[in-house]
Length: 271
Image (tube, rainbow, N blue to C red; front, top):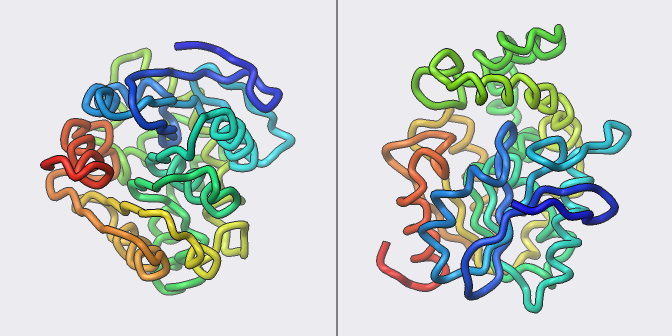
């Protein structure tokens, strides 16, 4: 792990592997180290850069600025210093950052591999009924967040999005990290959750020509599949893959399978 100043802010960054360039963007409440299992499965094929997103790991966060704006600015700065367009690999909020970077700077992106991009503003535009259900399902979690009840918010979040056992079975250090970072979910609201027209729309992603791999877990909330339906229909060059045995945390809980699927997509290796 290195700490570098990128786009004017201190950024945690992890390098691994050799081959074609790739940038990896983790989910909320995680950090670049969450990609360890995936990096192990791709290190012979990709020269990977995993970034700590704003407020996560060793990266600073400016609360006066939009969190996705900061994440995209840093990611684009990393992409600009590479020798060739890079493969962008993202998970959850990291996937929304990857998709936005591709919209804003398609010249820097060779391909997109997106696991459950939680761009619920796209769901609001394309399937208002499903969006309303998602907002209702997230209501209890949102109330805890707004009240500053961080542990209750963490427990509610993991009940929907996490792995079996939730908050109580986590190691103490992981619990502390989650309680530190979960307030940042509030910072995601404007970027990806509110019903608004943002920098990424179902209309402007139709212009993306790079190959895209769109992934989800069969055990994730139903709205993920409905959202991916909309994104799949909009992207002109897309493959879809459903992981039968996992949910939202697939790139972490099933890292070897995830790496095999990405290898097959990028290089035609047997998955």
